[in-house]
Length: 88
Image 1 (tube, rainbow, N blue to C red):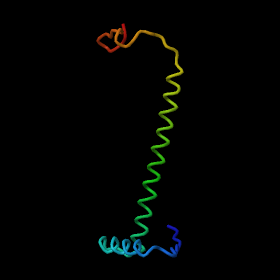
Image 2 (cartoon, helix red, strand yellow):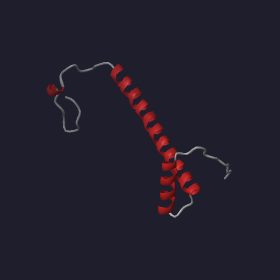
Image 3 (spheres, rainbow, N blue to C red):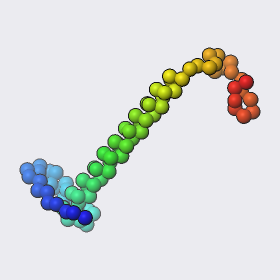
Image 4 (spheres, helix red, strand yellow):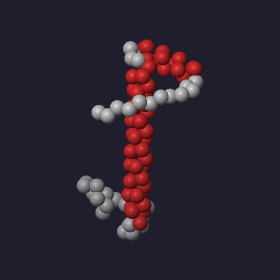
């Protein structure tokens, strides 16, 4: 794994105190805790991005479905189904 150095300047004092507290609670250094939090944030954003992509796929499927011709224009209440669930 390649590693790099990141220096965070002018971090608000309350945020630094919170990070120190979180690190102590998890028995980590502040550096290790910051990395863990960044990894969590990245995973969350990647997950949200994947869900947005899935949503686009669903929208595309719905668009194609709506473009299909209507073969039976009876209201759903009027369509009878056989034992296999197929319309009669």
